[in-house]
Image 1 (cartoon, rainbow, N blue to C red):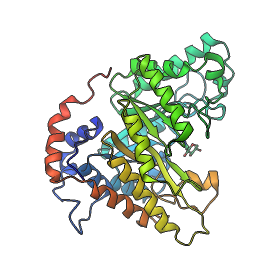
Image 2: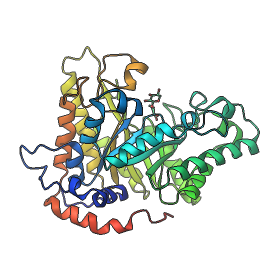
Image 3: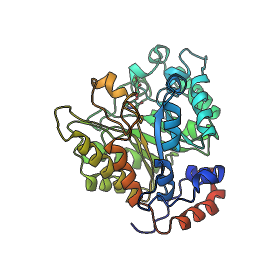
Length: 378
Ligand code: XIL
């Protein structure tokens, strides 16, 4: 691994906020070093995060310590979605999301905002779906994004402004009240509103099933180029990376090429929601899962613009895969008893391989550049 320098603003901020934790003095790349994933990740120059739910912080005694031990970034799994924050018009409920932000602050973690606009009819409250007058719908969009992005300004370093604008398996815009009422320009509008409310946040378009390249990734690139050409404040693309069969046997080189094709447009990149659900009939499933995690993290580390890797949870005790795709697919890094699985070691090994020599040089350089944090973005 070459001596690359990757300086996510959130990472440099963490180095300043919690230098003792970040600069533990242990070389996590040394054989036998016992480091949490976050300690290795800092030395590799990336953030490593997990989705989290506030109920588990209080309801499961093993959850909070394990979350804080391995991760230096946190995404609200559901609590920052429109439905959660503004379930009825004009009535905002910030308490559950704020509890997650408090936890992150206490544990020197960055916070990803997810998501200002996931416009699927089932993800959006009925009063929004029912608003088909363009001016009224624009008013709702403006109120929601301005209120939410202002509320979390200074806490959230990156927002998934628009989540899943396309159909799941194609690059066609997905029908929803915003597309149907305002046309595709709703995407640009959402980014402009978010930027006006929080000029310091990095603004992402987040999509599913673009890791492999192909037609959907091509369509996303066209959309991104079009937005950038219009001067829309778009700073990054998020790759959800929910790897379910048959997509678990992903080619790392193909993912790297896809990442580079977006980096070439001048964007930051993140893995935003990774999990790897395997078939129970596969006798080698844990090893295969480990390989998939290692491959994907290594591909991200080979691309300088890939700044953060977030998993969609961390323990098989609590995963959306159980409820959505059926139980027993154990898609995460720790098992249901919070023991490290082969997958955890796959991520750790990929991060260790990404630590440049000497690690301390990277850390000092990062700290020196931290003053650039949160300068307004173009
Ligand atoms: C999921 C949550 O994990 C579930 O708890 C919830 O019931 C539905 O949403 N893509 C996304 C995430 O962008 O917001 C989704 O999260 C998973 C798929």
